[in-house]
Amino acid sequence: MRKVLSIVLLINWMIIILLFSQQSGTESADLSSGVVGMVLAMLEFLMPAYQFDVDLISVIVRKSAHFFLYFVLGILTLNFANEYSIYQKKERIIFSILFCILFATIDEIQQIFIPGRHGGIDDVLIDAFGSVSGILLFYKIKLFKK
Image (cartoon, rainbow, N blue to C red; front, side, top):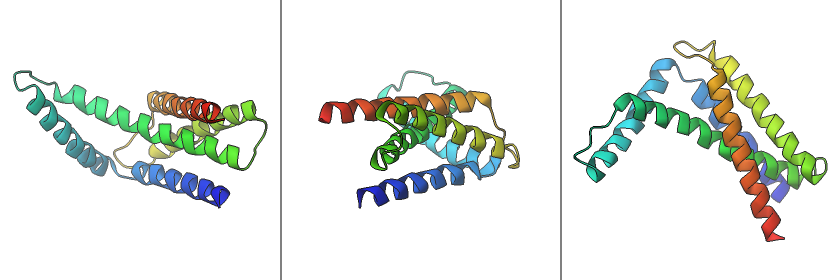
């Protein structure tokens, strides 16, 4: 059951990432604007005297979304590799990192063909950093559980 759950979770998370990537530039901007609005409202509530740079907050929100989506993808990928005993333990980490980077690269390339979107190497690097962070955290947690 755990094996099946690991692949179902991984595939579903990949679909979620691709659904976000398939949004047009307008849809993506609208979603980001809504999140930025909520973040700004919280920040202004906590620090009413401070003047926040909306553009900076927008970039942070968008890049944090990349990091988070791929952080989870990294965890789910390593979990899948562990459940199916793909390669040896250390090689599973390398497999997971390469898988996530390849997926991020393909994801960014396909965004080139979406109206109002662009694919960027900077996003692939953020995705890779998120994936590696998730993979290493998951590895450390699994290591300490034993």
